[in-house]
Amino acid sequence: MRRFLLVDDEINILQALQRTLRQKIRDEEFLMELYTDPRQALQRTSEVAFDLVISDFHMPQMNGVEFLEQVRNAQPDAVRLMLSASADFDTIINAVNRAEVFRYITKPWTATELEEIIRLSLQRRDKAMEDRRLADQVRVQCGALTPQELEARRLEEDEPGITKVTWGPDGSVMLD
Image (cartoon, rainbow, N blue to C red; front, side, top):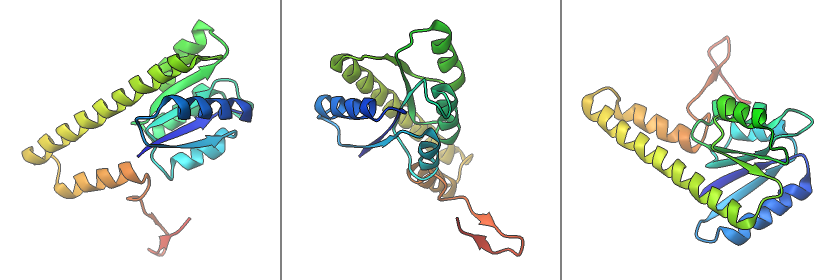
């Protein structure tokens, strides 16, 4: 099952985006999580792995480039898309360079355009994940990666943070 994270400070935009995606993407099983607060969305990226993240550019707490840059650091495999009514070239270049945004979606979008962008985004993610899987197999065969390290990577990919332990000063495990 695919997971999408949608972030925009305007709930109406999120709901319209959600409606369009539900109507147009019928061959994929997916869950969508909607956030109007980018800080809450960032917190969620430390708990669950997402295949696709769509963020608005103009938000009061932080702009979309800052948000997607932090998403890239937390989940480098998530495909990042920027949504904005602005077609400012500097904004687009900044998004691509800093947050490695795959596509820039203009508001208002067309359903067909959005469907194509999502299809291309998911293909890109699938290709990147398959390339990583094959590279990891080669690393295991060459002895550069142990089967345990490979399993830890897989677990971390499925559940971000699951392999990290916070230790207390007395050696105890600290729970969040």
